Length: 109
Image: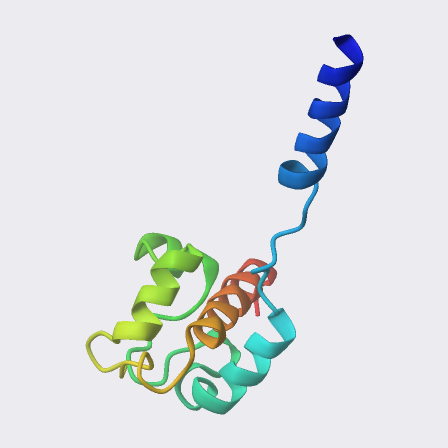
């Protein structure tokens, strides 16, 4: 019985805990998409339209935009002067861009 439980525990760990997320973000792809679609207004983490709303870490935090889900929502739906990209970019591309933006904000652009 102990061996059966040990094997069951091992199988559970292999299947559910140690398996990498198949939806992991591709930061390099996010950078390419950002460069092609976002950099005109947000080069270097800045904001050419609304200078006070940069992509710097502390500004994202202040505006409650410091998560992948918040950035994804903004990119998909747009807000204020920012256009919606939900109809132009695939969900995976938007997720990659959001992860890229968040990773760059942590690095300080």
